[in-house]
Length: 148
Image (cartoon, rainbow, N blue to C red; front, side, top):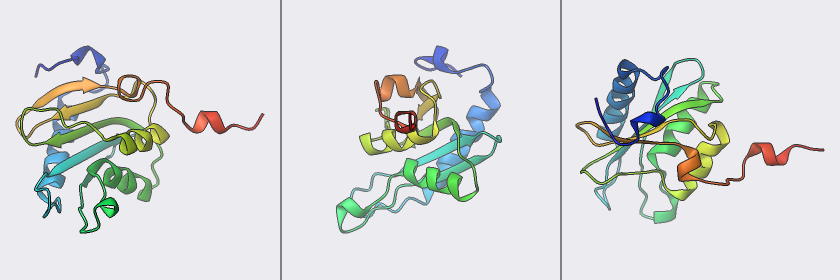
């Protein structure tokens, strides 16, 4: 499998694990609740224990109250006691990159390192690899809140 910025994918994130993340995100995407935008998104997280957690977007008639797929996957991960995102994959339809929104980038920052791979996919394949250094440069995170 070849895609843009593949050099950002660490060797421990092998092709089988990438495929497992894509499969989990696609399964979640099928369950997305998007009656208003019709824009279905799925996400899958690989945690520090090698477990995969997925989520989908859930819209609400009061638009600000909907949730993104990434937020759903983070909540699923946290509900199982995991506290670290080793890798994340986001899947949307089409060939345009569906990247995490600004709010989700900050949520990801809470649990991931700056170099954690963030894979962007469509239903057929992974399109690109990014990381938080690229998506959320010079970010504010938990390390800023340490008491001196």
